Each structure stands twice: as structure tokens, then as C-alpha cells.
Amino acid sequence: MDESKTWLAEQFEGQRDKLRSVAYRMLGSVPEADDAVQEAWLKLSRADSSEVENLGGWLTTVVARVCLDMLRSRKSRREESLDKPDADAALQGESQSDPERDVLLAAAMGPALLALLDSLAPAERVAFVLHDLFGMSFEEVAPIVGRSVAAARQLASRARRRIQGVPVPDDDVGRQREVVSAFLVASREGDFQRLLAVLDPDVVLHADAAAVASAAVNRDRGAPALSSGMMRGAEDVAKALIGRAQALRLAIVEGAAGAAWSPGGQPRAVFAFTVVGGKVAQIEIFNDPDTLRQLDVRFD
Image (cartoon, rainbow, N blue to C red):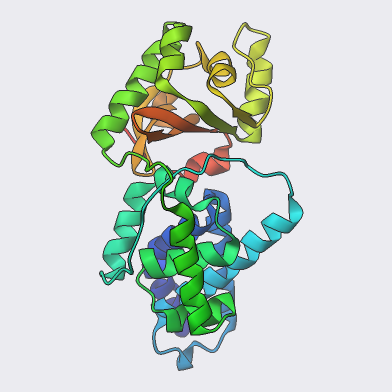
């Protein structure tokens, strides 16, 4: 690799964490976020970067456009809705804060933030994330979403209105941990009523394909059934998860309270929780090895 390419690769690596954070907030998927970041690198490596004055801004724009295409493709490919509850929150006003600080804030919100964004249309989501969370001006956002400045402003405003009045995910990690801990105890002890008590009546469970396959194998050994990748309702979710938390430990997953099975210190199964009003409103189960390698999972 020549010196210019080496320098470019170093500059890109310096931006990778921020780009991944932007992509994850837009897509809600670690593997897809990494794909978007990799696509940005491919575009950078093929472009004439000598005329790029602000490399960080250029890369953010590229990642945002890639994410917008992925969101649109996702919607056209799959008519079935994830049907997540309209989780969320009065994120109002226009951010005037430091974009770097907003990156850290977004990372800390983790799954709770994603629950706020899932009901938005692709262009709304991109405009909202870039402006309200990462501090980009509407003059910068407009060409990314292919709209005028005024239209981009309306997209972000519409996104804010759509999430107003929806229950706000708890952002106190200590409180989240109390709820997740109660869930784990009830599941381990096989206490169905206590498990129901900690679940929101409309709780939604999402499990990746690897988790569903693993549950099918373990069902023959007496483990609870996990019949599909998406389940809704406290009774069905409780039936699927009762007794399943035996080996799980409390953890911080992408900045929020969660749980993980980590034999030898390596996560093999991760549960990410969204807590709303002191109840578990959403659970995401990850067993896919590629996804697990990318998740930020920390133990006390």
C-alpha cells in the first residue's frame, strides 16, 4: 500500500467508531452498520480524496446515504412489520450541541433510542438522526435525503411529532438493572406470575435466526420453546423465556442494562432489554456469532 493509501486508511480508522455509531442508530443492526461503514471505505478508497476538505463530514454523508438506501431496500423487501410498540419519547427542539458529544449520548442510549426510531419512514429517520442527534445542519442533511432544505427540516419535525406522546424508555441504567435483575430471577426460579409482573402487557420479543435455531435444539432437552423470531404479549413471551435465564449474567449491552451468557468470558448469547415505565417493553436475543463479536457487552 502506498503512502497516500496508508494515510487515508489511518484517517478512516480514526473516524470508524463515529461512523459505526451513526450507522447503528439509523439501521438498528450491528452487521448492517458494519456493512455501511465498509461501503464508505470502499467509496473513499476509489474516490479522489485530494479535493475533500472535511473528510469526517464527507464520510458521514456517505454512510448516511448508504444507510438511507438500506432502509428503503429493507422496507421494499419485507412487507411484514417488525410491529414494535411505538416506544418513545418527546425528543423535541433542534440540537445545538457538539456532534461528538451527541455521538456519545446516542451510544449510551443504545436499544432505548432504537425503539424510538423504528416507526419512522427512512427519510424521516435519517433526517432526525443526522440533525437532532449528530448536529448536522439541514443544509447538510438536505442533499443526503434528496430534498430541499425546507423539506429536510419538515422531515425532522415530522419525526419529532410522530414520537411525541409515546412512552419514554427509562434512561436510568440503575433502574434498568433493577428491572432486568427481577426478570432474570423470575425466569431462573420458574415463577411465571413474577415474570408476568415485570413484563409490559404488550412486550415484544425479537430473536435472531441463530437464537431460534438454538431454542429448537434445546427444546428436546426440556428447554422452553421459542417458536419464531418475533413474539408479542406478556403471556407468550413469559412462556418462551421462563427458565431460560439460568446461565445469564447482568451486563451492559450497547449502553443499556442487559444480560449475557459468557462462558470463558466470550459472549455466546446476549439479551438486550428496553425498559419503559419500570416494565420490560422489548427483548432482543442475539446468538449469531458475527453479531455477538460486534456488540458492546460489558460486565461489572
